[in-house]
Every structure is written in C-alpha cells, then in structure tokens.
Image: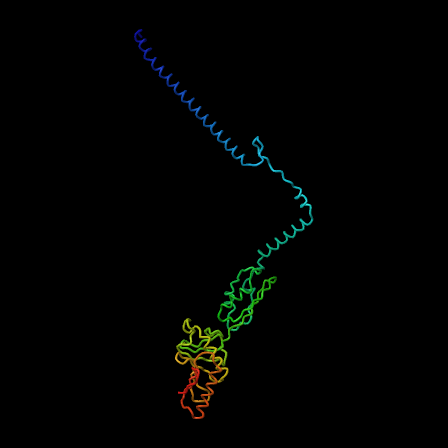
Length: 316
C-alpha cells in the first residue's frame, strides 16, 4: 500500500478511537452518579428509620438511653401459693365436674323432648296430635321448657278451657292435663248451630253436644258482638241475660233474638209473648213481668204481648 494511502487510513481511525473513549467515559460517569444516588437514598432511608425508632421509643416508659426495651419482672409468688392450695384444686375439680355435667345435659339425647315423651290427659273430642303441634316443644332440652308458656300456647286453641303442664326433668317426661271447653248454650243461626263459650265465643260443634243446653234462635245472627265478624261471637251481655232468664224461668228455652226487640219468648203455660230486651236488669224485669200477669189475670189489662224493655211494663 502506498504511504499516502496508509497515512490517510490512520487519520480516519483517530476520530473513531476518540469517540469511543468519550462514550466510555460518559458511561462510567453515569454509572458513578447512579451509584451515588442509590447510596444517598439508602442513607436517607436509614436516617428515617432511626428517627421513627426514636419517636417510638420515646412513647415507651422506662426505656434506657441505649434504646433497649426494659422487660417487666413478674412476681410469681402468688401463683405458686395458689398452686399449692388444696382449696384451689378442690375448686378446680368442682368446676371441671360442673362443666362435664353441663356438657352431658346439653349433648345427651335423653334430655330432649319428643312426641313419645309427652302425655295428654282429659281428651274427649280433641286430638293429642294437634295439641302436640301447638305446644311447639319438639326437640327442646327439658331444662329449658317453661310450663307456663306451654299452657299459654295450648289455651290459644279455642276448645281448650285449661291446660296444666307437669314437667319431670330427671325423667325427661311431660304430662299435660287438658280441660276441654263445654258449651254453655247453643246459638242457632242460618249458618248452623254453634256452641257458645262462657265468654260468648262461637265454635263449631266437636264431638257430642251435651243435652239440655239453652238455645238462642237467631237466624241472621243479630246478637253478634259489635265489631266482631257476624256469627263469630255473641254479645256477652245478651248471653248473660239469657242465662239468668233461663235459670229463673225454667221452660222458656228456646229463646229468640232479633235486632228490634232483643230476647223474646212465649211465657210458659200462657198465651202471652214477652219482649225481654237486653241487659242485666233481671230482677226488675221479673217484677214487672209478675205485675203484668196480675193485670192480665184480673182483667184490668188486655193484650197478647208483655213488653219489659223499659222501666215500666207495657201490655199490648
């Protein structure tokens, strides 16, 4: 190769070498800067951590200046004395036994009440199964059952007059004595003949109807308690008045009732019809009835109807 050509090639390589040196120097400088930045960041984090530790240690009482936590020193002497006490161990045994008994009562199936554990007495027309369902004690632990609450639930059945509940906890058995409702009168309406309870509630007959009951004939059920659905309950005032009348004048049954004149009936062994009305003034009405009968018997008054709904009797 000619000298001129070699000189020209050497000159062309010299700028490239200088450029590479410059690039390496810049890369080394950037690496040093990055390393210095990371070092400063790590130092800053260590300082922040130390500051937080000093703040935390300042909140703890009793710390020595070195920054260590002073652990409390417990006095175990009372515990050692308690462990050596016979009373403590006796009490511990009693607690363990009580816990065992509680677990036994809670987990053993023999302490839970089911249908075969309950017996009903005094049933004539009611079914034991319907009362069992109403009691709502299936699967209950016997020690949690409240006899008064069961009695209250059973008396929600309108045919149950009384329910007495007897619980035998250790035998896990329950006996319930039921007093069924016995009607005091019959309410004969267009919808049918209904039993009347002492409080006036009307019930559909169940079982045999007792003989000789007072009858109140009231086709449209005009004697219904105000505010109650028609035919669901008779007005207790009317029922009491009818009972008192039937007790004082045997043979007046059946009584009739209508909205215009109230209770009314034919006077036994006479042609006269009596408008009794309503209310509890039984004695005064009986006196007025006796006075009206004297007037009719003596001929001083004539008529076929004796009206006792007012303070004085009227004959018409």
